[in-house]
Image (tube, rainbow, N blue to C red; front, side):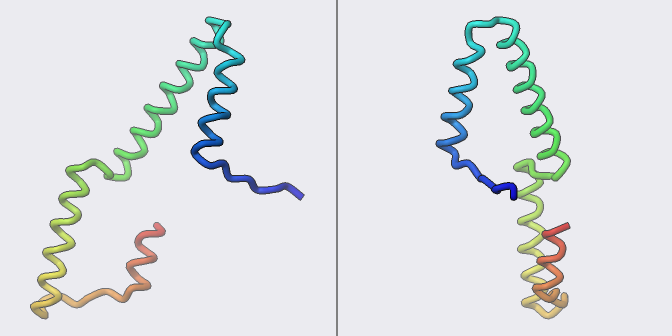
Length: 91
């Protein structure tokens, strides 16, 4: 049976430093590690952008949410059931 193990931020930091200490004396390995880390950062940034998580997008989403809340309070828009909202968040 495989044990699921989730590392804390401190454990991850310690593991990263431990691994870096093994390769710090080899410039070729350091270059490869740096290249890999930069690639991971670029991929993460691309994923965040694709999700629309930019500060501008968050502001726009909040504006729309408050506008919809006002319309619901005025009776001009019907509220969605909470289950539908949760389902949208999971997609």
